[in-house]
Amino acid sequence: MTVASKDVGMMTMIENGNEVKRTCCSSNSGCGSSEILVEYAGNEKWIQGVINTPKGVVPVVSTQLNFSDILGSWKARWGVNRMNYKINPGLYAVGTPDNESPVLVTANYKSTFDSLRKELADINTWILVLDTKGINVWCAAGKGTFGTKELLTRISCTKLHEIVTQRTLILPQLGAPGLSAHEASRQTGFQVVYGPVRAKDIKEFIRRDMTATPEMRTVKFTTYDRLVLTPIELVEAIKVSIIAFGILFLLNLIVTIPFGLDDFYAYVGALIIGCVITPVLLPWIPGRAFAWKGWLLGFIWAVVVNLINGWPQLPSYSLVRAIGYLLVLSSISSFYAMNFTGASTYTSSSGVIKEMKIAVPIIIITVSLGMLLILLNSFMGI
Amino acid sequence: MKNRYLKDVSTLILNTEKCTGCGRCIEVCPHHVFSIKERKAEILDKDGCMECGACAKNCPLNAIEVKQGVGCAYAVIMGWITRSEPSCDCSGGNDSGCC
Ligand code: SF4
Ligand code: SF4
Image (tube, rainbow over all chains, first blue to last red; front, side, top):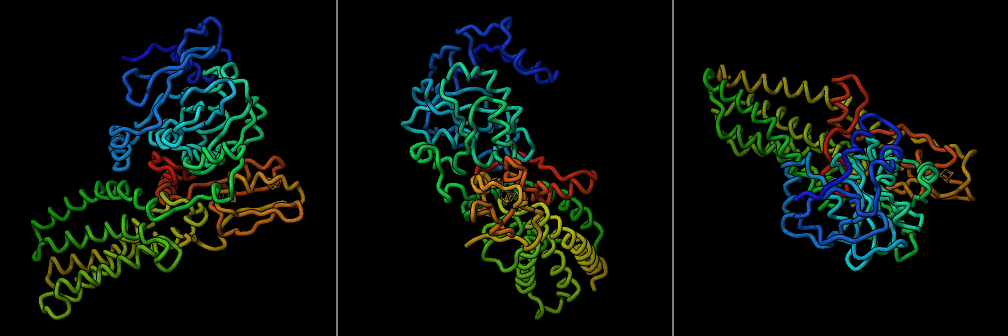
């Protein structure tokens, strides 16, 4: 059952780009106290009940994640329903907040929302969820969807001014690239403070009178952080690879030495090195550029593949093919490692561009050359 | 072990003249790039900067300039192909990272 909502008017408002306040809170759309301020499905397991406010009913959310929440996040990590894993924007309650309770602002990507609420056990707060189109705070801030405009819209749609009397909003620090705190404060009438980077520090932050330690302000990129980012890289890489396998399959119909299991595991290995192993071992691999790190491990892998295949002892295994492997496999790993810059939390745009201007031409040349050698070997047996 | 990226690439510029030492930049920067010395901000670790733009956006006196951008190879490739500025078009899947 979906609880009725008056959000339709608001949607129109965004599309037409009209002024927020007028459409959203106009008296003719009915802002009576019985109205519901956020649209939500009543059967959502993470909603425990409702709390009455002077301006309407607000859903109270659980601070515990259940199996379907965990499964949902896990699926999103593997790319299943990733673009559509979101909740309705609006105001939510944790515990029994009142007009003096803090307001935490977050994105409507469900994994982000879940990781916030699970840290809020035993405290009473409001959560204002912005419509970031199901994207996490950091990316949405980069795109500007987590920004002053959306904050203004959401404040006025939820009538936040009338629900709370305190005038402070706690925004996640990672949202800072999306807005100016001083601008947003001026426009919303709420003082905007930046909370800690990680949700687990929120309680401590509130306890310390809204001050964060330098540690709370630092983005980390731990081995675990990197590991959980690798599945999506792998899934995307495999999607592309299916095309490559198709081409090899067709080539097999006409070549002298067909592509076999050796080539398959060599390729999959290079993929795993670029998408998983390099990201996980990132800080320990010498050098700084991602493409270089991936190339290095990919090259080692290619040497291993050649040795397993019996080179140089096996006379049937030609030097041409061995060199081909060295060139192709290292480049594949290099390319996918380079792609991990997008998932990392410390690469600058200028740095990535600099790295790519060198790496991309090299990758194109070595892959082409390597493929040529392997094909020469496959077609003519040299 | 600490992750370090390429040296001498960040476009970060601090105009000390304008700075009043309010400390906002220190608060928002996720990589400890700034510190305050004698009531002025100073750049401690320029190579730690990931060009997220948080400091420049939040400095009330516009004392900081940085070319805000996404450090994402995929975005750069798409930008090259479509001849536009790289932008992050993937849906972010994590809480600590980018896309
Ligand atoms: S935010 Fe701006 S004014 Fe404040 S300390 Fe930093 S540079 Fe100076
Ligand atoms: S752009 Fe981001 S990482 Fe660089 S100094 Fe500013 S806040 Fe820090």
